[in-house]
Length: 333
Ligand SMILES: Nc1ncnc2c1ncn2[C@@H]1O[C@H](COP(=O)(O)OP(=O)(O)OP(=O)(O)O)[C@@H](O)[C@H]1O
Image 1 (cartoon, protein in one colour):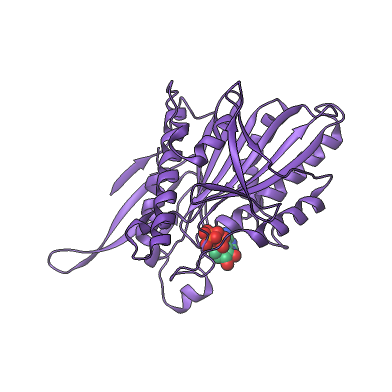
Image 2 (tube, rainbow, N blue to C red; image 1 turned 90 degrees about the horizontal axis):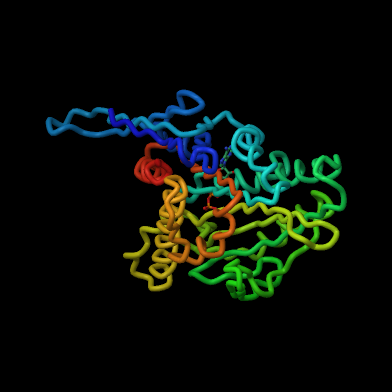
C-alpha cells in the first residue's frame, strides 16, 4: 500500500486542504463503472487501483491519503461549507483575505460544490448568507456593505463576467497591490442580488467544446465578495475560484492549436498555484506569484492576514482512476 500524508504544522492555520468525493452517477452505474474510492474517515481515503500482475492475475494497488478534511459521497454542500469554508469567514471581517479553491477534473463536482443548484446552494451562497447575517447582527460594527465582482481567466487573459466579457487588465499600484482596472463591482444587499449576479455571470462564462464533455470548463472563474464600510474603505475580501478542469493541463499535446494553447495556460497556472501554496505552507520568504496570471491577481489573497482552503473534487469511478490519483497527488502537501 502506498501512503501519502498531507498535513504541515507550519502552514496548517493558513491553508487547509480538503477532498470531496462525489457520488457515482446513474449513467456510471448503468455502464458498470465501479466505485474505487473509500472515504474511510473524515481525514483519510483510499483509492483501490485495479492492476494486472506479470502472471496476468488481477490485483488492487491501494493508495492511502490523509488530508485536513475528507468528505464522502453522502456529504452535502452544507457539510462542506461548515467544515471547510465557514472557518474562513471571520477573517474577512478582521481586515483579512480568504480564498477558497475548487480543484479537480471535469465532472468531479467543482461547480456543484461552488454554485450548487436551487435545492442545494453551493459555497458562494452559503458564505454570502453567513456574511449577510453577521453584518445584520452588528457583531463587527455598523454600516458594512458587500461588493461583488465576477470574472474569469481564459488563456491568460481576464474577462469581466458582469460586463459582456470585457477584457480586463490587472495592474500593480505604488504599494504593489494588484488592482484590476475597469472591473465591474455590484453591491449585493442580500442573497437574491448575489443569485442574479451568479446567474448572469455563468451565462456568459466561456465554455469550450471538447470530446469528453461539451460543457467542460476551460477557464478559471473568480467570484469576489468584498466587505466595505460607509466610506468605501475595504475591510476584507473572500475569493472563490472554480478552477478549470485539471485534466485539461494534459492538452498541451492536442492536435488543435487552440486546445493546445488552453492546455498550456491551464497547466502553467495550476503548477504556479501549487508552488505558491507550497511556499506559503513552508513559510518560505519568496512566493512565486508572478508565474501565472491566476496567482498574480490573487497575490493579496495569500499574504498578510490570509486564510486559504483548497477543495479537491474527485470522481469515484474506475474510469477516472488516473485523474483521481493525479488530483490527490496535486492536493497532497
Ligand atoms: N456531491 C454531489 N452530489 C450530487 N451530484 C453531484 C455532486 N458532485 C457533482 N455532482 C453532479 O455531477 C455532475 C458533474 O459535476 P460538476 O458540473 O459540478 O463538475 P465540474 O467539476 O464542475 O465539471 P466542469 O469542470 O466540466 O465544470 C453534475 O451533474 C453535478 O450535479
